Image (cartoon, rainbow, N blue to C red; front, side):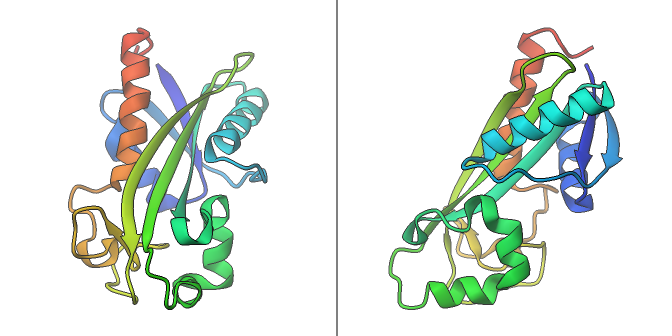
Length: 186
């Protein structure tokens, strides 16, 4: 199956490309598109994939991800990008000051849609916790404060020697399984 991977984030494009190629024929389109304000990442990625598939008349793949902090009732969640621009990691750490429950998780929602079809969503989750301070300068977004489960360091310290975040890989693995079992990998 050939599809167009659409994102305005070059780092996200590189991660997804590493996870999808060479098994799948991926065309890259760096494009800004309106991000809908819905409650769940799957709702957002399905709606965006449907809109873009109809507009471009091609099968498209989009990804929406967010960091969800348990003590903040899932905030920033779908507002991760906006929150990062407004208050940054320093602001999130201020909100977490004195909070014992540091549990957090990332959700990655990959939307896939062909013109005239219903969109699909493949969800990947990675558990972890929020560090007490900024740690490391590798990566982007919440990487300097997000510690993957079982690790003593943040993504900002670890980087990703494999070239991708685990939450994104988990979503891509579900997408691949669907495409390969559905016989859509041509």
